Length: 318
Length: 125
Image 1: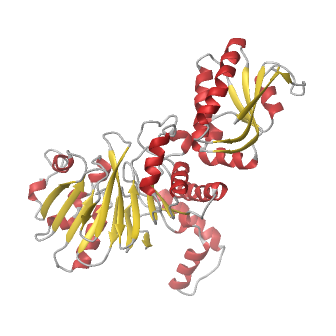
Image 2: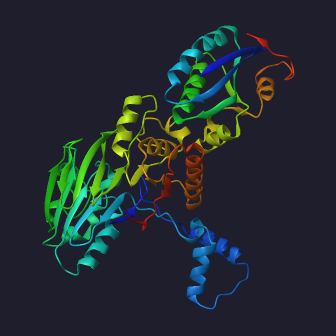
């Protein structure tokens, strides 16, 4: 299985500006310090091996969309943020006209998590089966509402794919195609749901848009149980802890610090920071990753927890 | 979690020892409550001496934040001082160094919150 991140930013899509690109080029030229490269390949090797991620690449700006690629014609994806547009293009290119089944698991229906659906190419292809799973009773209403006049020119019913909405129950494990999935209630305005997937002996938890109240011991234990032993935990690390529990308390998001603590408690193996704050630059996000790894090292009592920061286009093989 | 209290001029110095995490947050809050009352009554600033604090979790940091908030209700002031390197790093990574007033030493903290010179000997509260 490959976990592929199509959108990793929270709240609203962002894009690099021309000034951002210029700054990256300037930093790369300074680092090269007059060196010349005999080929594009040699130059690529330099960027890959000698430039930091924040200069060589970008974390990207699409809102949440994460695919679990099991191969074949059936697809599994969490959320339909703006990352759903490139995901849809990828799917259509791979299918070469063969009909696909797409299983979509919705954390909740806030705008940043549904805004990609009107631009999800497979939804316009006859023969595509789209199953949208979630625990909110307003799931279908929200998808239809964002395409209703005057918000969007193409109504939901004009999309050619075969659509179905499937209600899931929190805490109840269900088999969907090749995966077993258990939703878990999370603290967020209007509620959100995390998903624990069991796929071919591996477990992946998708937990975004979730606030964790530090004084609620029972709730902390419940969340740790949900994460228990997971191979990957994709975690809402939008804010610094100091912000998350003071000026941004009750905004429904969490921090890198709490992500490490919960994963350590759960003996999870790999924490992936997700739902990046739109105001954070590539350099800031890279620094946050380094600090999170240091915090993990400082507080480690058991096995090492691998810490990564998600970026648009990132792939993790399991 | 133990809190050793000493008074220095206008400052009430509370020394924390051990670890502060979700398991003993309530104990810390209970231990702190009477000191908050007396500091409010006697118009004293509180200096939390963290030189013996080995570890603080997110829940423990939240306790500090709540204490500072509570002190502000009576125009009081709580600062932290003498963080061990590991605790100092946790403050920095969590950005609590921007949320709370942090001093390198207890004497620097006392100097900042009190009109008395920092080297004045302390006495039991």
